[in-house]
Every structure is written in C-alpha cells, then in structure tokens.
Image (cartoon, rainbow over all chains, first blue to last red; front, side, top):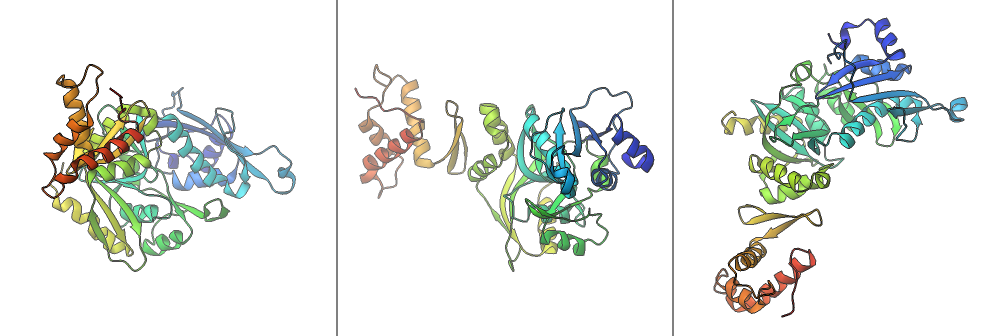
Length: 308
Length: 90
C-alpha cells in the first residue's frame, strides 16, 4: 500500500494521530504533524512511497513538526522539527515547514546511519552501475541530477546522501525528493514540463527552494542495491561545452573523503571501503552548461563499459 | 596505503587523517618499512638518512640523482610534519 492509496481524510487522520509511517530506502519513518504545509508536501511528493506494514511497531525515525511554542506564534509563527521528542534545531518561519521536514530527515539519516559510509553526493544508476556525484553547494549537482533522473531515465538512488554499505561496498538507495534552489527551479520547470515540483518557498537559509517528486520507478526499486561504476565531480560552468575529464583515483579518493559525513567515524574501515569503491570506479571531472549535452555525455559512459 | 598510477593515499590511524602522496614520498615510506621489516634498522628501530638517500637515488632519474640527498630530507621532513614518521637520534 502506498501513500497515495490513502484518501486526504485518511492521510490527515494518520498525521494528526499516531503518525504516518512510510518507508524510504532502508528506513521506516513515522511523521506526526497538523501543519498543512507538511501534509500537502508529503501527499504531493511522497505519493509513491510504500507505507510501513500495518503491524510495524518499530520506526527508525520518529519525527514531528509543529508550531513552535514561543512568542513568535502570536505574530510570526514558526515551525519546530522534533526527533524522538527533542528539537535539534532552532525553529524556522512556518512557511518553511516542508523544507524543514526534508532537511531534518536528511539530518536524521546523516547523523545516525553509521552502518553505511555516507557521502554528501547524488547517486544515480543505469544498467546496474551507479554514478556517484559528489559536489559542493552551487556546483549544479541537484539540477543535473533532476535532469538525469527525469528526461535522462536514470534511476534516482539519492539526491543528497550516497549510502555505501560497509560489509560489501554496495550502494543502498535512499530515493527522496530532489532539492532545487533559486534559478534551478525554473530551469527544471522549463526543461521537464511534466516534472512535479513543490511550491517554491522564499527566503530560506538556502534562498528560494522547491523539491521535485522522485520518479515512481525509483521508489518502486528502492530495495535494489547496485555496484559503484563511476565517481564524477560535476560543475556548472556558464557557456561551457560538456567535458568529461579523467581524474586520478587518488585525487578522487581525497575529494570524496572530504565529502563524507562519517568517514572519520568509520576509521580504517571507512578508508578500506572507500578505497574499494574508488578502485571499482572510473573517475572524472565533468563541466557543463547545457543539460541536453550532459545527458548525452552520461549515456556515453555506460555505452563504453560492458553492463555489470 | 592504496596506490593508483603514480599517486597514493595513506590512512594514518592514530590521527584519523588521510593523505595524498606522490611516488617519491610513497617510495620513502616503503623503504623505511622494508628496511625495518628486514632487520636492517639499528637496534633503536631507526633508519639512517644517508642510507635512505642512497636507496632513493636508485629510483631517481639521472638528472635527479645528484639531488637525492636533498630530496630525501625534504620528503622526510614532510612525512614527519604529517605525523607519518618519527625522527630518532642515534
């Protein structure tokens, strides 16, 4: 049963009551809220997510969002994100309730899921091999990711968190809405007219933000792990041709380690896992300005390599 | 340490840091380790810098060989500053 199988009334009832329980990748999440911004955002973008089993008593993350009980509520209400009954962050303006849910859930995973080596990177897959896309904010990573999983037909494993299983270096999906900022929102609206994109929220700490609904096929295959195939550091460069430049594995190693959330926590085991991933991957720096050219360049990668 | 082409990454477990090394630095580390394992080190577990320079000279190009001593000292200093080796006075 999926989130979209619930009527609006049933959905509200769950959120208001014991919580909506759904599965995202390897994790069960329980969300309680009465805020329409969060309910509407989840109804729109999480429609294809499977509900947790009716008899499930365990959830990895117990999340709630409510109006912060401070003086702001009288003239400028704020939203409070809570995990296990505790508020790890300062409240934000109420209009930012849905982005706060997304950021908060990312935080839940990135600070707790230490059975994985976690890289701050998008990750997509085609023909059984994954492309890991580590990049700092502003590099165009999410815009590129949205285009690749939209018109490009790649499977979305994650827009933000690449989860590498410590036991076998498999990449474990965590497909979630793709986060877009500022100009990227209109770029993707224009590039893919059928993309389902949430309402733009203005004046957040990241500027204007909106989220793109992940492809239903990516959600349906969220339990399928895959092998690493490429590590590509993307960078948007105005007016640039699409160029895929080889990068030495040692340099790629250092850069991807810099993008890891818990590399230092994993110690020597993290080094060995990352070395295996790098060893199995071709590494590149990719600069681009035109999304169509980027899609062609990415498809060329797996055409050059035999399927896994 | 893991090596790809002519570059290497090494994990320093005591500090939790990872470093990118060039070929020469990796070679010095390997020589130190090999001499120690082979029992060529002194009773203090140290390796003499002059022996290291002589060994490194064998890996240098002809025009680099006269500077092997200087090169080895620079590399030793860099490795020491990273905490990967320790200098011992005999």
